Length: 32
Image (cartoon, rainbow, N blue to C red; front, side, top):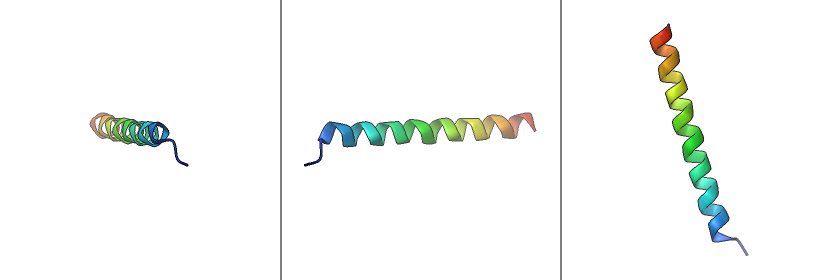
């Protein structure tokens, strides 16, 4: 059985990684 809280936590972590990845890319574009 899947723990629903773990599933939600994983989605949240992935979203944070994705957002931070976008922010880093935007910063790199600005500095170039």
